[in-house]
Image (cartoon, rainbow, N blue to C red):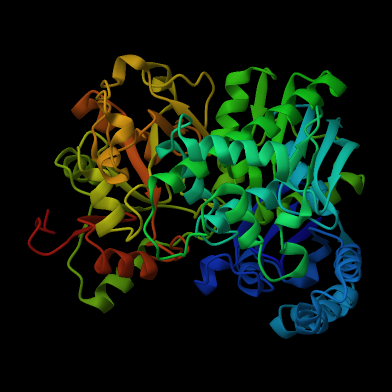
Length: 607
């Protein structure tokens, strides 16, 4: 039985195809349209999934949509009625599209699918799965657990902003829900806007900025006190109540009331192009610390009411790797599973898996999805396609055997070069996991600045993730569990650190960023933390061999792994996009499948 899963019309639209419970293909629409966080109906992702499965819509029996449109429309209407006559401009602007896409969604869906001309649609059964249940299903069904607590936290679904489930033998029990407008995710996004970053895009920038802050500063103490005493009431079970006088998201205009925030925190809203100051770092740290404390309360409460030893996490807030690392350090649960694509994209697959299980066709939950079966689900391209592209561009390249290619890549990395790495099926989700990656040597002192400014064209303060062999994790980091999906931040071992100068807290952001604080300055953030991706031979054999080869040359299996894109663009999907990214940046070399090329004047392309 084929099920087509779809998430769309808010942000990060995606599609998937599953067959008898096996995920065949999944991809985000942005990778095809090149519009970051594309929210449109995912026609390109659907077409790819059907093509990859070698089927048409005629073979699809069911469509699983990741939320309930009518329930969401109800929340929108109640929101506008609550604030009337305020919000009238937004009401007039958005309500026609909402009626078309929510009230008459089934017609909208049929029209979109018919226009694709990929088969009939009248026979299709359409199931609508609640937003947070789709999140929960993605997390639980891809976990190795038969029984688990499941915690989902995001901005808002239909009404729910966070939910607590118990999952057992493929079935879910809803234990508690936090409803809109009292949302931890919307609070975090409000601070994102306050600090001059874009909502639903810049949250990870704020997370990366927070370690530059000081908990001893006056602004940190003022923001933390303002949060706790005036802006948010936090209950023992982790639920929250926002003081809505500080927020404007109900009116559809802005996340925050800028005047109220300035009065409370003593700092004006930062403009997007305005320079970052220490005060902005202190605000980010206060918001991050507050968020972690709420997440920990939620985790302790769900542990208390379920007694489970396992936890599954999903929803946009589960992209907060620092909070995930904090949960692990707290040791509330014995085991934690955080899948890739924890945001709305993964919900397309979650909805499909849920429908598979409730249909009776998949009564027993799979014991374990192989890691590569939930992470590398996108398009792949043959050597012939790559060869044709390079010939059409007149690009000199060398075709190497696997061992020869690895030797070339390792040699370049050892000498401080930055290498584009385009191999196999594209990753599903926001993280590059070694299929569409830019790699660098983390032992090079200026590698972070080089990649940020000359290749990624982004803020110099932003840190990079590290990939390393799973079996080497204990030799470098405090984390005691594998992290195959780059979802956890942990600290580097004290033995690998270099002491900070006594005046470190008085240094500027740039000076802190430039200070070499460990043996691996490319991947250790200013607070000695690192975002971890562990690699095993089963999940990504080629990347595993590369790390083994790099370790053979250097004694260490650690590499920088950052997404193959530039700032404000989606991760590359096709060889053409990888090649163009290679040309317009200061990347030194590119491994496009087995084809190896370097920039003119840097090395020879000849073997």
